[in-house]
Image (tube, rainbow, N blue to C red):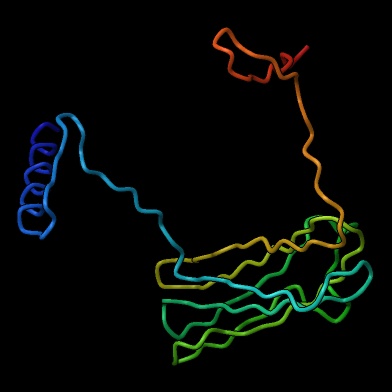
Length: 175
């Protein structure tokens, strides 16, 4: 482990010496590490068409891009709360986007009907079958219907600690 830290510091110093940056400093005990967030090879972007109104059908344009090349992408639409929103009557819950040889995104439109005001969500998942298995991406599309605002539920009481900092005291759970 110590050799790895020494090697990392040496590489950082070497890279710093080769660059045009005026100075590179590394403090002892600190390693130069970076975290890489894994990304799905499938991305879903959306555009809500019009203003969401209770009981009025609403269209959402979807763009689905894949870095895996020409493969069929299966899209699934899901509403978590059927009392808040539903798929339009003629809207299938699942569709396929045909494989494309060019890098153009797959375009689809999904239609929903909001049934109440508030912040509602449509979940869209994209699935691709590969030789290595199934790859899926899910996006929750927020749909704000009306001007109803979300109110955060306050739990516990706000007090100050011995240093004067605000803290929230929560009741102990369980019986």
